[in-house]
Amino acid sequence: IHPISPCNNRIAIFPPYYSEIEINPKDKEEFNNQKLSIKTYKNNDNNRFCNYRVFIDNEDFGPYPIISSEKFLKTKLIEHKYICK
Image (cartoon, rainbow, N blue to C red; front, side, top):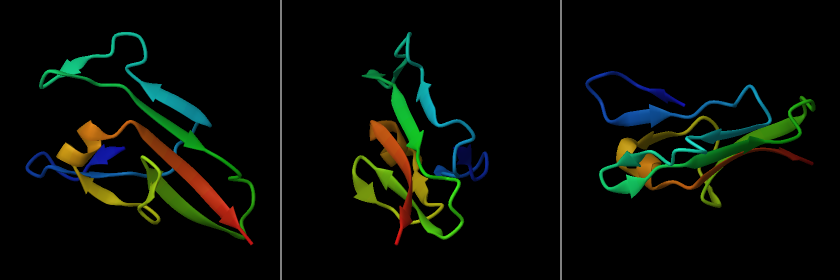
């Protein structure tokens, strides 16, 4: 998860290195009066014949999406899936 630039409110989402990550799992850091904790998962990344997709709160955002920081802060779950035929 990377900001596009310091002057932009857009965030790019790339495949994770680890199979499961939780951001701020213990502290549930507060940001704009919201408890911030986001989970990200990946699956089946060993098959090169699969299509990579990103699901944000169960909605398909396609491969390598760029979303607004407002959408990111409201997100609870980011899933990185490899859809194989």
